[in-house]
Image (cartoon, rainbow, N blue to C red; front, side):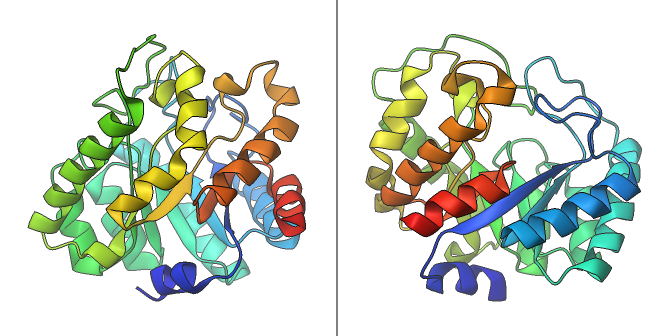
Length: 267
């Protein structure tokens, strides 16, 4: 709970640096999926200005594959143990599996980032309630962690997201999760639709989600709706992060910690 209070009281945007311990993440798969490289990247992100490190052991991008509980554990637990020794930054765990979440929280992780918004594992909310940790619940058009490239159409994309998040917040609270623990993420890119305009519509109207009275996290980094080649998206992502912050986001989740930090400092 100390972390969520810190985020709420922060006078500047909170930067969440992404560390993917995977061979198949869409922009950085296999770049950091061994301990030596991952430790180096954690130290780099801390120096670049990250406020939180978000460690993930399973890709959820298009064409990604299910990862077994044991495989995700092998990817995540060793680097979590190392991270807790080499940095004082809070560690978030990007997982939808309650067993992984519980083990990581027990070891000292500070937050859980669930891209399925509690749909992937019915026991997740109970684990969050037990450890009183912050929880990010994210909108996705897909009920599982396997993101599709469907051109989903919306009559009112903001209303759809608001309705979904309200429902998942109610589910969390029924299991004992407190309002103060919940952070919302409206999703971006293919989590919304392959059609880019919906992601931009969300960014432009992000402040409307303040009606939910929750801290807002945005993770637009390198996503396809930005256009162009993946290696050319960081500058666009920095601009989108600035828009998101100006429109109400408190947490910016990014691969590009240094660039994002620089533009947000100017703001």
